[in-house]
Amino acid sequence: MSEHILVGTDGSKVALSAAEWAALEAEDRGVGVTVVGVYDANAFHRRLVRPKDLAEREAERAVTTTIARMAEVAPVVDAVGEVVEGPSPARELILRSESATLVVIGSYGTGLLHGTRLGTVADQVAAHSRVPVVVVPNVPTETDARDVVVGVDGSPGAEVSVEAALEFTAASGGRVHALWAWSAPEAMVPIGSPEEEQLRRWRRADLDKALRPVLKRHPNADIVHEVVRDPPARALLTGVPRVRLIVVGARGAQGFSPLPLGGVARGVLYHSDIPVMVVHHPDV
Image 1 (cartoon, rainbow, N blue to C red):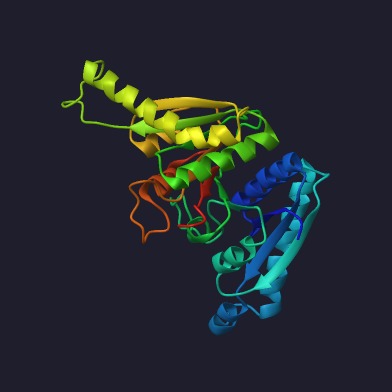
Image 2 (cartoon, rainbow, N blue to C red):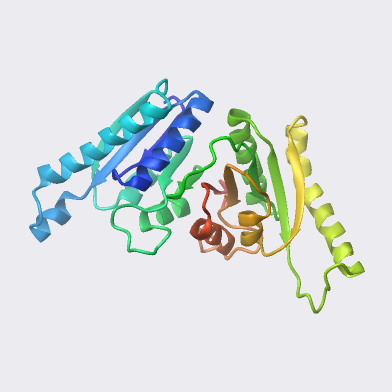
């Protein structure tokens, strides 16, 4: 199967924003898009709310509307639609992600409670997809921003995340800001102290070491080394201005192995106003 981006949609405003983002990314990469809408006919039947054919038509409308919106922003992109019956949209998208190069989904859909920033489907797909997932929030993004920030902590997952960031910028242009965040209580390590400077040098050495294998494979890569004193999630959200995408490993060096998403990844997903790419290490 040819390379393509998988887009999940329910026709909501956020889903359409995600589709626009996916269309522009597909245009940069020169690949096609598959748009998937999922409906649960059994749930409607059990509750006697609406017939199966109406549920199916709503899913078809969502897919058609999404493809039309993508054609407005990237008319050259080849987009095809697929309507699937199933009880779990997240499960259907995860199954189909195995044949895709990237999954793009809105941060929440039509069923979200007011005030919540990350819906169940986006959460589950980001947690369990084996290919990178981009979660797009319902906030207008700066289309002229091209740089990417990626978190690095020395873990195998971080190295894979840097590779994903480089792949993204290879298609869209821009630089990769590889960011190593560290923190310490100010009472123990005062700001501006010799101890802080020493820790900063050590973290810079850690970052350089972590990036060495990637730079060997990509000697001409435009990677900016960033060391920030801040908790990792906050550093990724605020440490580098004007970026188009935040790339984060699903689980970092301190991650609890049974959890598919670590605290940093989840914190960034819940609070970011720009798209976030979650990358899983293939062997984890």
